[in-house]
Length: 372
Image (tube, rainbow, N blue to C red; front, top):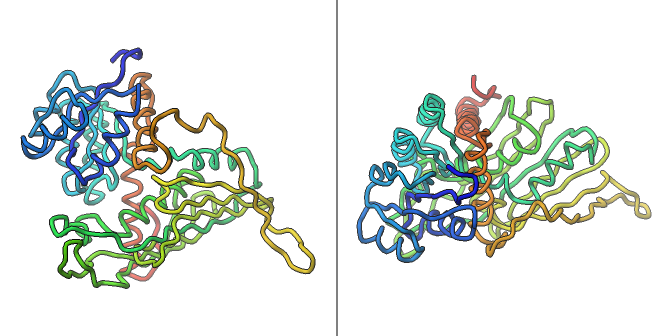
């Protein structure tokens, strides 16, 4: 693969309203470093339609044909989690680098098999935790590393969203065994922002709950949520920092994302109106408290994020594909340069282990060491 040529991408899962159509395809089309070579769906008519819509050179109605195409340098997988393992394994068997959306798999066992196959073949991988590439998130990590608030002590993070619409033909979204719900999605992404900025989780005590089971399909008809809509946890990181985590899919009105990091000399506050992975994230920094008359108040000032943390693209931070494009470009560069990309499948497995620990803690009512 030449460093001077765009990386040619094959997208598995290109039909609307999936995340491939909403994020992966716009991301690839927006980047001069990436070229859309082919799309793949389960049926010839949808594959052909997606190719026409997005300008792909080729289309396939089967993953094996796409993976065996010698003109494809990189495969992205953006389908329901149940298919992440078989589709990613097909690409790995063909020796193709894989960018697989989060959740990496249905469970840790599948994720480990995927990571092991990649390691055995020496194949680069990436997992879709693209919130790490949000400009404010990257800048917050740099500020913390540079000592902007001194030694970090604790954190409070939350993702508070309302119930989302579900079509009856996508009823898998309401079931825990499909790796859906607040635990796998909202909590997983939120916990990854903590890991990226502050470090890995040592142990965790958590509860997963379904507080509001009734649901209504978008086209009518009722159902019950069979997956968690609320997750609460206390986490201790390997460096000794402790914090609380709250993820909700049952908050009305929604309050978005917030991560407050308290240090010995100040605070960092990240905030976004929705999922931080694809909505603009603001960043504020300041001292712990300042006196104003007879009361004390936060004195956090919103800071400007350096221009180099942004990408020159037709997409904006409000587009689902903005941070996906940044992640894919970085992944493509890492392949060309022969360096490890983060987050890769190993990072995805570690996040699955944290989720396992929350499930164990919730069931047994105790603090659980991650990975034990």
